[in-house]
Image 1 (cartoon, rainbow, N blue to C red):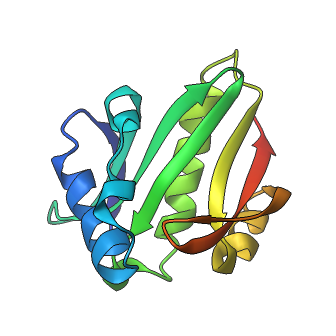
Image 2: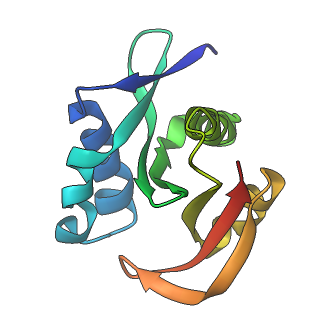
Length: 141
């Protein structure tokens, strides 16, 4: 299975993926999923060999921190390594910005081990986001 990951200016496919995964599957309230950060973020889209969107993530900056968020992969592509490839693409993009010192993300608790394998460490305590328990995690750039 060939999947390409690229930055996109047209975020309609990214939003559709987020609606399917976060709102429909995980029952995140739609008003919590869509926010004003979409307009100031860089969006990555993963497409299969037929051009079908299968994953997404977004990036934005806060001071010297590159924030990775809204990472999702459709069910049919989970367990294939695509999630790791998306995070690696995010880290690669953030690493091109010399003023950034670390990457940060909010990990759903069940995904902490996944992110630890990619070099992230938990910082701070548990909090709820969209009705789902999370922990912040950071990795050096």
